[in-house]
Image (spheres, helix red, strand yellow):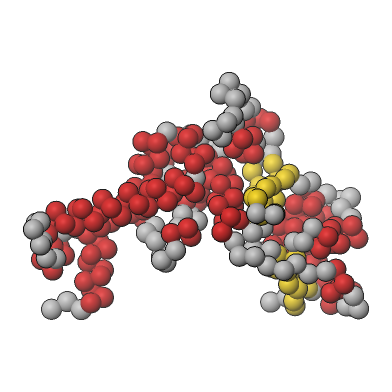
Amino acid sequence: MPTWSELQASFTRALLQDDAAVAGAVLGDGLEPEARIALYRHHVFTTLTAVLKAAYPVVCRLVDGRFFAYAADCYIRQHPPAGPCLFEYGASFARFLATFPACCDLVYLPDVAWLEWAIHAAWYAEDAVPLDCECLRGIAPDDLARLTFTYDPSVSYVSSPWPIDRIWHTNQPDADPGETVCLEAGAVDLEVRRLDNEVTWRSLARGTFAFRATLAEHRPLAEAFDAALTADPAFDLTTALPELFAEGLVVAVGPAR
């Protein structure tokens, strides 16, 4: 007699790999066990595909609904949900698309997906109270250099060699159908966040992006400053640091881990 965990594993294989070995443990109740499993499988894949479409509408529009359904099917089989909250499902879809052979010619597609996930995640992020710059008063320079910063949970950073912001805009329902995007238009470094119940983003200068994105990884201020100077030797920390607080980005500070 299989254990409960073994039955669960067998049922998961039945759903994701079309393995019918678990059919003997399923009551048909008017349907053949295989048919009941197939019905449940259809419901699972239909629901999860709809979840992915809701999170990635521009990706779906770019590749066509039928291709998106095919890609979603492959993704779901390889990356089933790990938790009960469906709005959290699909975080790795951009990474999946980057290695999905069927769309390798669409070199910009994974980065568009990263932008869409950043927007999606910002909508569902928890609220947080920003800190005032006064919290740094009295901290010695050496200690300040070792500080790490925690941002508002809605904030994320997306960098791409492609104009993914323009691609996103031209694939909105109200966009001009005759508008086109030149892929050689240049790279973008975007900061995405939720402000006043609206998700917005803006393009940042290279130094500012490097500084903020490095801090977002909970790396020390000194490392973020070095990254910013590498991107832009004219980067000014005395201006950039207060701006983090003035824009309400920082919700906690602490020592380097």
